[in-house]
Figure 1 (cartoon, rainbow, N blue to C red):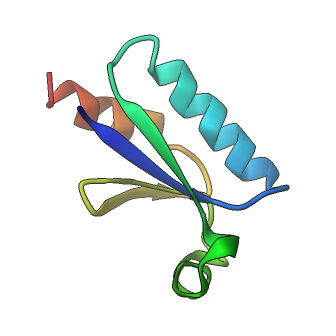
Figure 2 (figure 1 turned 90 degrees about the vertical axis):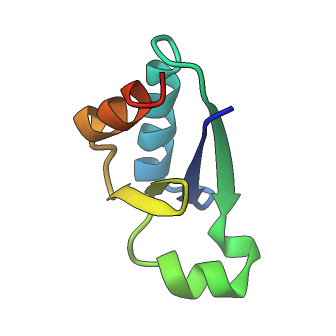
Length: 80
């Protein structure tokens, strides 16, 4: 199963928008979304604090701040 990781934190409007965009893509593609709350982990907070939301697939960061829908769609399509 393909898993997209979403690095985010509570009360982040951009993170909520990114989650909605990823959920919309789930109507076309089969994948899970793993939300990682950076505020619960010091290392994640240092790595992602000023860049969230960040979407990653297989350890590769695909986009930050906003979901690059075309890129995410392309990566998911290549896994079919």
